[in-house]
Length: 393
Ligand SMILES: Cc1ncc(COP(=O)(O)O)c(C=O)c1O
Image (tube, rainbow, N blue to C red):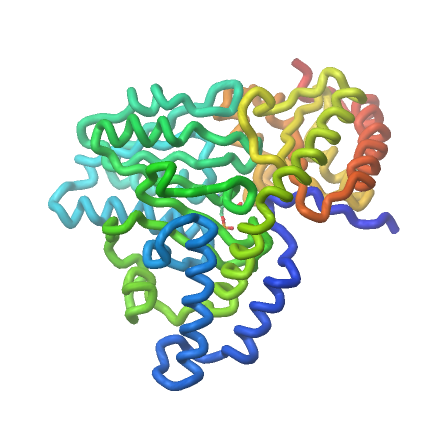
């Protein structure tokens, strides 16, 4: 049996010991319902408050600007549908609204936009350039008189490319338009300060930075009140009703606390590993294509294409060796469609299908990178000689 090696941290991360401890405590000791007035409720409320403070410290924002959600999918839905609801309440119809987003967003942004489009709202999907970056001037040029929202992610899940958000915010605000960003793949990897970026709304997910799954948050600039997203009780300032997921929230708070102190080490450790992997692979396969190489990237992500190799077959062969990597985003796994992110950057279908994503984490060691290189040096030439040619360009 091959020893297992996990290089798919953009899909999810293994919860840290501190996170497991915080979740366990919220399930056992602080098990109360935060809405209860008695001691058990007070303990649970304290757990939620502490977590919110820890997350606020990581993001350098106010705790009352954060709403806990079931993850980034919900936070993205909450932001997009919430802004639309707000304008509906002001008397605008869907036909009088327009959203600008990018073609490389996560499905949890693209699908809500498509849903609204089907109901009459107009959406412009700005493509990314070959470097993986969305051009802020193109965002600006796409803004129309009735644009209500610009939504562009901070770091892309497939390529790790960091988008020029400050300029996007500047141009959008210049035209009086709110800006939302899906920062799911950036939080815990690079410093992310929504207020400094100038954003109005920002989504994140704990399981991408060593927290538990099913726990995320939406940051809303102070005063940026949205209508209720889930109706019921008064939890989360009545925006998101339902008894709080205290174990998930406690875990998210612990993850945020660790991420804050780990950031410099994370950047140094992951970029050293990623660069060693990139250099090693280039030495083995000089025709390898590196997506986002010319743009700033989060330190842990390497998205590469091998002409003549099917990415899915490569991923499955690496899995047989115990090495977990990804093709495109995990949410698209199983359907073997070319990554819409790479297509949104102008790749041909064949190029997109010959790609795999390595994403490193805190536990990734130099030995693991060496082993990956050794395995790749065996598998890729074998696939090139046995698999009918795909992705040749
Ligand atoms: C960029 C991005 N946005 C949103 C999500 C969805 O996050 P969650 O799993 O918390 O719903 C992901 C997860 O893969 C992601 O990478």
